[in-house]
Amino acid sequence: MFRLEAPAFLLLAIPVLAAVALLHRRRRRGDVRLDLPDTGARLRFGRSPWVLVDDALPWIRGLGLLLLVASAARPQSGAAFENTSTLGVDIAVALDVSGSMSAQDFEPDRLTVAKRTVERFVAGRSPDRIGLVVFARLATTRCPLTLDHEMLREFLDEVTLATRDQDGTALGMGLATAVNRLRESDARSKIVVLVTDGVNNTGQIAPRAAAEAARALGVRVYTIGVGSEGEALIPVDMGALGTRLQRHRVELDEALLREIAESTGGRYFRATDSAGLQEIFDTIDELEKTVIESRIRVLYSELFRFTLVPGLALLLLERLLAATRLRRLP
Image (cartoon, rainbow, N blue to C red; front, side):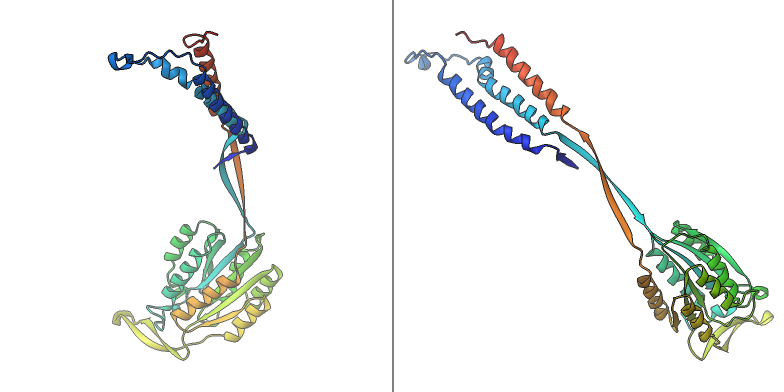
């Protein structure tokens, strides 16, 4: 970035150019000349280079003065630094990994679609800290709140269904763990996105108690019920017979999920297919926009020495030549 701190000084270039042109004209008119007819046709005299230098003296002086004028205008070079500050949004995603999330009413299954959707959601929230909690019978933090979304995506890729001995749906535990991740946050907005396809059936913390804790801490909870209505095909391990698909009736406590969301100022959504789940996350993305403030600071360095030194050198050269080799007699 380039600028002139005092551009008004450039106006001095006009009288400088006028003076140089006038001086050049006077010098040429003031030359003593003797015309010798026909000698030019008979003799070919070479023209000394010093004659050209002598003619250029006014322009050397003028160029030196123009460089001094440019120095007075204070040319500066600047580097811009952008300071970005954001009040931000801290987001904890609580993802159900119980066995029913393997249901194939979503292609290829509920958990895979949920992971992909969360990944796209994370990709659009670069200024925000996002964490990941998974829950089945127990709830665990897979990734704390972080701005390192690449690391978060790696943890998300590693999420798998709970094993048979850890199967279950501890909604209260999942929500409480996510809320605890936000307990010490000082972000402008703190939210939990709870994704589940079941009914609370285990855990030491009741969902309503977890919702009350969220409300007390100013955490807004968005709940998402996943799964088609009616029945869904779920892979079941039949031991020696291998895995078989069996139809199971979808059980989803929508009343509880809606109550949790509304009690904290959030909203409840129902996703019956992949497109619907993506639309829900897009809606949450719009509802929780991050406000970013950017301030641009420019640091300038002075460049006048790059015109001042050559300008003084040209004036000194012009004076030296005019006083020695190109000195004119009165």
